[in-house]
Length: 135
Image 1 (cartoon, helix red, strand yellow):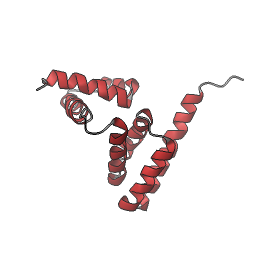
Image 2: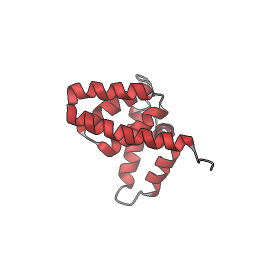
Image 3: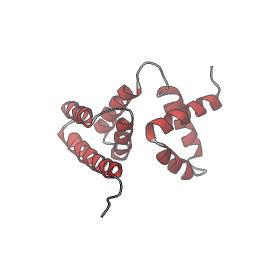
C-alpha cells in the first residue's frame, strides 16, 4: 500500500498533467494555514487515488467530471475542467455532445450555463493558441 507521501507525489503528477502547471502553481501559492490540509487531501485522494485508478482513462474521467459539474452547477470548476478536458484529448465536438447529453438529465438552464462557460473557455483558449499578432 502506498504511503501518504507517495499518494501525494502521484497526485501532484496527475494534477499537473490534467490541470496544467500554471493552475497548480497558483493553487499552491494561494495555500494558507486554513487550506493546507485541504490542498493535501485533494492532491492525495482526488488526484493520487481516484484520478490515478486504472479503470478509466483521463478522457473518460473528464467526461464524467464535466457531466457532474454541469448537473450540480459548479461553474468555476466547470471552466477549469473544460480546459482539462481539452488537455485530456476531448475535442470541441465531444464537449458539445457532453453538454447536450447533460441537458437531458440536468435541465436546459444547466446546459445554457455550461454552453456559456464553454464558449468563454474555448474563446480564451483560441486566443491563447493564436499568440500575439504582428502588425
